[in-house]
Image 1: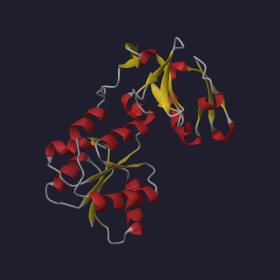
Image 2: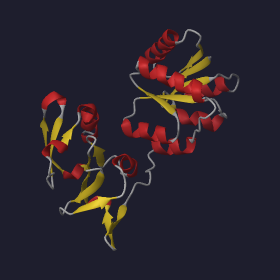
Image 3: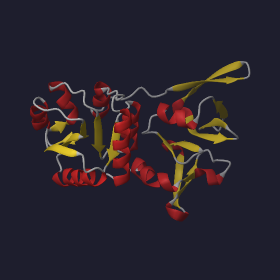
Length: 251
């Protein structure tokens, strides 16, 4: 399999090439390219089976390449972007590797490519809009059924969402609890990630509902929310999400 690496950090490109050789010695890196300009020139004359491509290159966003040359080759993005950008990749059916790249994730990406190499669907315009700062259309309000009545609830009025007894509810800032007819997994994709964060399997919280943060055991973070949660253990950021939570709060 022939691959191209588009990466402006020499050490990162060399490390990726070395890891590819360790995982599959039959992989041949045809070239390592550092810029948009060089990539356009090279791709006009050559083809490969797979391209590893960084988002930000020395002379601009790598999406500029696709304005100059048509590419149907499957891509695996390498990125230092956070979880919210990664989620955007997933919705566009593109594989990604978060820097620093792990050997396990690289191997899994190659395996995925081999299984589905003809099934990649790349929406360059959507990806470009994400990285150029255009705002996605996130959920603004919910229409909730309460018996025979319908109630409109603005997302900005919701302090947090939580799962309980196989159902999902929201609690508003004025302490009203209402049922939500969507899973927390679905809500993650509907809510603005700059405002809402899923702290664990049971809770998605609004940043404005956080009154206090306390360092907890095993690198976790306990939150004091307003309105308070009924189950205090529920408002603890899980170990796996603590690092991303800190980045979210510090963004």
